[in-house]
Length: 310
Ligand code: TUI
Figure 1: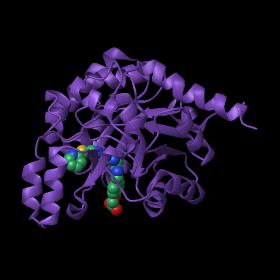
Figure 2 (figure 1 turned 180 degrees about the vertical axis):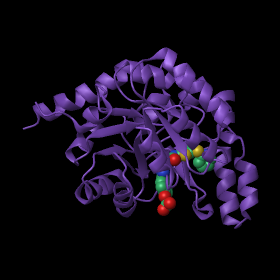
Figure 3 (figure 1 turned 30 degrees about the vertical axis):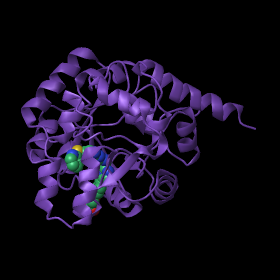
């Protein structure tokens, strides 16, 4: 039998990562995914290091399986969180929204597996040269902060350019998406939005219901002109962003409107003015499932599909 490279590298049962979603991916969600045999990932987002520390302590009580910490490189607390990851020797660090730069060496010294999210082939080539263990290629179908390329175009180009394993992300929520990713040469998949609508996810039910009710065309990318484009479900907030873009408003107006908006959606369930970061695949998600069910549907389902293909 062919041993999956990502499973071997990380010592996990199923080659599936739960995306690190700011405010959403806490120890409860990540612990449930790791217990079910995937790689659960805590998202540091813009949180201070003491919150991240307490979530790491919490997940260690929930699971003895490997887990990851997603560090958002635009966070004001990124330096503290990067140090914390090394001190606590988290099994896997995933970086997003920027380059891990000099921290890669520190983490490698501490035996931490490092997997940067890459929006382009040149970035992936650079990460391999710096010593990354694998990369995540995230297409613009994903929710939250996005690059320009689609998963379909990005994944095979990166697979051909590097020799470390590639994990595909963006637009994957069921067995068909995972099977397609494997066919593009990916060794694993990262799934965000589908896990947001899971039983173990603490996100507000209003947010989950908004995803369940979404159609394929209901997400939009805001803030292209800010340099930090974000995909989310259309609402008053995204309309406001559109207006600001048309008016070519100064950056601080975008910051003022967007400040605290993700917390509002995830914690308070404010679906009007909160930021409903979610991927284009939202339209495919019709019900809440347990993390265990999601993982088996996606990975066992993908293997079944590939085996039955003639
Ligand atoms: O990071 C994400 N998605 C996110 S982060 C986030 S939190 C946030 N909150 C408010 C405003 C903005 C963000 C929500 N969603 N995905 C991983 C990802 N990384 N997508 C794209 C990239 C990326 C982009 C540029 C990675 C590296 C990069 O490097 C540029 C360079 O050359 O340094």
